[in-house]
Amino acid sequence: LHFQGILPEQLIAIDCRILLCNTYHLGHRPGHERVRKAGGLHKMINWPRSILTDSGGFQMVSLSKLMSVDEQGVNFESPHTGEQMSLPPEMSIEIQQALGADIMMQLDHVVHVLTTGDIVEEAMQRSIRWLDRCEQAHTRSDQALFPIVQGGLNLELRKKCVEEMAKRAKYIVDFKLKSLRRSAN
Image 1 (cartoon, one colour):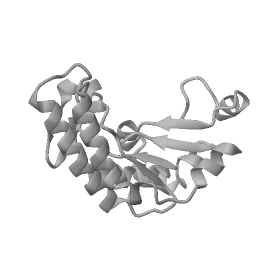
Image 2 (image 1 turned 90 degrees about the vertical axis):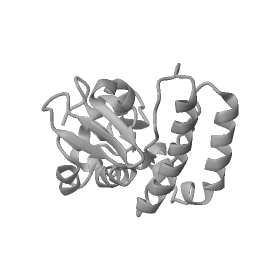
Image 3 (image 1 turned 90 degrees about the horizontal axis):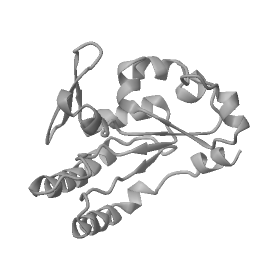
Image 4 (image 1 turned 60 degrees about the vertical axis):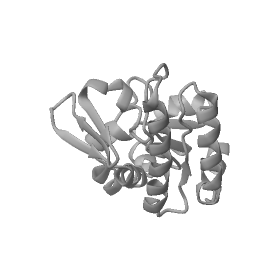
């Protein structure tokens, strides 16, 4: 595993406090079980500071021609191998936990920022339901689970989403401050 031209030591030298790692791609290669067996991303890449993993949801936009979404989750076709990959909210959390992220993002139903119409509210409602499923799958108290607000550019939908997310704040923010302490080092 490499940083495409930059070493962890170089990132530390420029005071990088947190890495963003991609759940979808790491779930494919090298695979979350391989990372887990290596002791997590921190050990595998020798990174002493915080790691944030996305949920894999952004690939709904970046790989939009190779995916479909339904209530169960997202189904992708690998752009590299053609292999099918199902990513329900529970699997997103399982992968992120195996990677050893300090901060995990919920799987949300991502729509392009300029999308309008009923799909925006549908994606927002689904993201709220998926947050509940992510919370059920979240078993490690040393990893924070962050929600993602959906609603497109519609401020009323975004406000509604924030209100629903706030109702769930007890399990979203109930984690040890390990990741914040790690970033301070």
